[in-house]
Amino acid sequence: MDAAFEHHLSSPQGRGRLPRGGAVGTAGGVACGDIARVGAAVEGDRVAAAGFEAEGCPTMIAAGSAAVSLVRGRGLLEAARVGVAEVARELGGLSPGKLHAAELAADALHRALGEAARRSAAVASRPGRVLVAMSGGVDSAVAALLCAREGGGGQVVAVTLELWRDAGNDSERSCCSARAVQVARSVAHGMGLPHLTLDLRDEFRGGVVAPFLADHARGLTPNPCVRCNGSVRLDAMLDLAGRLGAESLATGHYARVHDDGGGPLLRVAADPAKDQSYMLATLAPASIARMRFPLGELVKAQVRELATEAGLPVARAPESQDLCFLAGTGKAAFLERHGGLGDRPGEVVDRAGRVLARHRGHHRYTVGQRRGLGIGGAGAPVYVLATDAKSNRVVVGRREELRRREVVVRDAVLHREADRVDRVKLRYRSPALGATVAGSPRAGRHPRLELDLAEPVLGAAPGQAAVLMDSELVVGAGTISPT
Image (cartoon, rainbow, N blue to C red; front, side, top):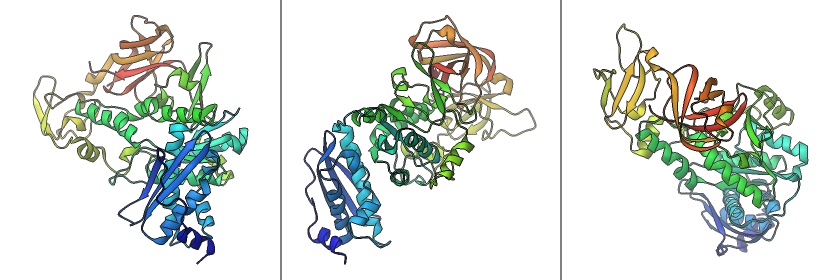
C-alpha cells in the first residue's frame, strides 16, 4: 500500500465534517455500493472549508480525504482544476479497479464547488476572463479552445450543467446528464482549464419539463429548448460568470451578435445549416450583450477540423439529435412516465365532425402530422389540422386545409419597432417566411400580435416559438397561439 494512500486512509482529512452552511455534492449510490458526499464553503475567491463523508470500500474513504485536502484553503479557480487524475495522484496512483472511487470523489467535489460558487463566490473581475459553457460535445469544446487561444488559458473557466437524471435515459447520448458532465470536465482539464459543475435539475424540471408536460396536456407542441435557453440555462451561467469575475459567457451555439445602433441583437450564423439563433431567440438584449459565440462564423467541418488538429478527444463525437431529456427514450413513454399522459382513446374526425378513426390520445399528435393517423384507403392523404384537449379529438383534413396566411402570436416581445419585421421563423428547421406585423406596434411586450405572411404556411403548430426577424437579425419572439 502506498504511503500516501495509507495516510489518507488512516487519517482521513475532513471526514465527517461537512462545513456548516456549505454546499454538498453527492455521487455514487446503491448500484455500486460506494457513496461520496463532499461539502465545500466558498468565501470570496477561496475554498474556506471542505469536508466529506463516504460509504463503501476503503478506497472511497481515501479518495474523499484526498479530494478535500487538495482544495481546502485554495483559490476557487485553482480548486476547480482538481479532477480524477489529481485525486489519484494524491493517493500515490490507483489501479484501474480502484479508480472508480476517485471518479466519485471528483464528481461530488465539483457539484459542491459549483453550488458553493453559485451561492457565494466573489472573484475579482479580470479583463478578458470568459466563462465557457461546455456540454461534452465538439462544438462547446472548440468554443473553449478558441477562447483560450484568444485570451490565454488562464482567462478561461469552463462550466457544465447537469439538468436531468433519469433511469429511462441514455446518458451517453444526453448533453445534460452526469456522464456528459464527466466528459466535459475531462476535456476542460485536458485543456488546462478550471471546470465547475452546476446542478440545475430542480430548476430544469420546474422551468422546462413541467411546462413541456403541461403544454402537451393542453394540446400544444412546445419547444423546450427555447424556454431552457431563455429562462434557465443561460441565466444561471451568466450569474455565475459575474461571480467569477468573467466579462462574458461563451457557448458553442452557431449564432452571431450584431449591434445595429440600438443595442445588441442576435444574428443568424454564417452556416445556415447549423444556425441556432431560433433556439436563443428569447434571450434579453442585456444578456446578449454579455454573450460570445465563437463558432458563429464557422461551418461544422471547420469546427471538427480545429478539434482534430488540437487533439481533442471529442473531435468525432456524434451530434445529439434528441431533446436532452428524451435521449434514449421516446416522447410517448416520457409523457406517460413523467406527466401521466398515457393512452386516452379518442376520435379522429374531419372538419364536419365525421369520425374517421380512433387514436390513443390527442397529446401524441401535432399540427401538420401525417403519419400514425390510422386512416387507410386510396384517397388523398390527410394531415392533422388541430387537436382538442377538452374533447380529446384530433381533427384532420387535406393538405391544402393546413394553409394559413395569418398567425397569431401570444406573450410576444419586440426589441425593435414592428415595422422592422420582414420575416418570421415558425420552426427551428424551417426557412424564414416573409411576414409583417399587423398594426405596427411599438417595441416592448405584447400579449398578442397578428402576423401576415407573404405566402401560405402549411400548418403553424400552436406552442412552437415564432421568431420575428429583420433580415438576419432577431428582433422579437413569441409563441404561436391556436386560432
